[in-house]
Length: 462
Image (cartoon, rainbow, N blue to C red):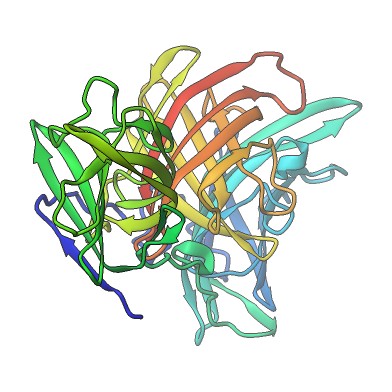
């Protein structure tokens, strides 16, 4: 039977439209150019504070993999390897996309691979499939080991424009970046329960948002063909994912602003309300910004005034969405580092391919204290709690990174830590989560441990 779904929107939340990532962008920043040029576009960077200006640039595109090599007048070389090239941002610490810096006549090059302690990112901002030219920006921290001693190099302000590439094989068309959900879809509204062991077959599900005594509430009413109803009232500020008892012992009759449940058999009698502390509801997804809510519940109902008949509601479950339009939520990020509030003045949500998957990176920067926090996870992540790792290996890991001194070569990474996804609306790309982790130097060169706690974010994938 096709159910009728009724949504009453009595309160509307207005959200600011967030910036988008992985789209065509205007190239900004300071350009360091060589007056003589390279004969193949321009390529420049700052390496440990010194200008690197290429006098020769070569590039090849092979089955979507870009190999770009730039050499300066002294013979020093910067190499970028980027897989699945598109108008996107790429993590250069991965095996699939990486960067190297080689000093002339030195045998060992510096690498941005995360497995050796490196890091970095590159952004492709233009890929001309007809003229076979490419442009982008980059920065990376690279490391090498010489005589059992780690040496570092910091590359910033990297930019290349108008670089012609040789198409070795495959297509020159840019690969598309996945925008949200990783192919997952949001479940439809549903409701199920048994009343005294008999299935409650609902005909309609009505979801209403109201405010009672300054408390925003979500009211869910499921109704059968003969008019029997199960009603559940949920405060929006209840606390999110978890298990709750309803109703409280001191409020057998609801004032409309508490967690409550009731059953009415449509036979003309009073509604049988949940007997205090006999029922529970467990939210496995609760999105204050997405409006998605999934829960299981059970309770015993009785007339709160006259007592008498007791009805038992069991095996209850529902999935609803109480916010009609969730898109355009402003990106939000909070955390404490070693017990003190972490503040930031920029936030960027980017995507990069890795091992056949798309990785989401939430990067915040505090330019005042010159530090940053990054949380990374696969785009097809689902609601739940995940153990964090210091590196990506398969592409299904969750990684946290703290950089206490931007420009230095040591990144402190999650080991251990947890990430909890509270809600993920695949259709709009709105995602809510929380995190905490101990940030350590995975190479054990610096024994400092930074404790990142009370982390929380809301983002919109574009």
